[in-house]
Image (cartoon, rainbow, N blue to C red; front, side, top):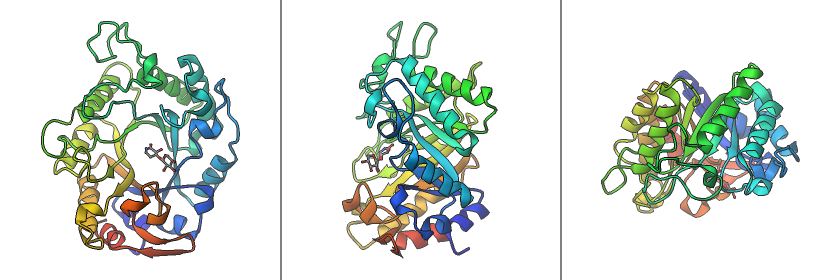
Length: 329
Ligand code: XIL
């Protein structure tokens, strides 16, 4: 196959990209079969303080572009401490209102929604993030799990509301939880990845009990030279154990630092991309990979040169990493 999109389809995956309306050149639909709005569906873009919607024009542009080009859409994101905009400090009731409004606004045109993003603490603590909205959580018996009866868990409450909306409207939309530094079973340098374990415990609790709340798990996969987030050999094993819970696993925001390869103009980076793609391909439940932008110059981490193209809109050039991914697919 001669495009990422076609090669991925043959392998049974979607291959997606994060984009904004200004980046919708022909390459997007040629190379990619899935689109994530990089910023235009975040609460600071579209939420009012009472959980209503505003300024949905950019999001509509992206959804329409995807639909007319046969691309899936990942809605990103409903409940997040960052870019919360007018929802900063909102109650669970207001979050639930926003969840309902956003899901019904686009309905089944959104294949996957990131319902909850980045709920867990940094630095491998395995705890919940203390920043909003996790301050809404109440751990009644103080055991740190937020999943017992009597606990209120913003993750559970948000997924409950989202599931209810999906059911009431007969939508095909799947509901995902998304995070970073959860990719490996271990952290770089060794030791258990407690953040991955905490995510796993939540997904297990809310998929194996009477409530099937979570359909999919996103590993952001911003791989860099931080020891907690380098690509570990056990990426595949970690993908596998989540898939074994019956959820789809996606690599949702992939970029891989070129620094990891010692500035050797991309060959080490290309090899790292191969490893990541292979880990997903080897697990049936890993159903899609999304890169977090088209070209290095457009990346949120542009100095790391972590994407598949150089150049810019209208003048994209394929890197070694692009050819490696295409070949591996
Ligand atoms: C980033 C965007 O790429 C930037 O343009 C924006 O300024 C900040 O957010 N985790 C996520 C994404 O879930 O939404 C973030 O996107 C990157 C980290």
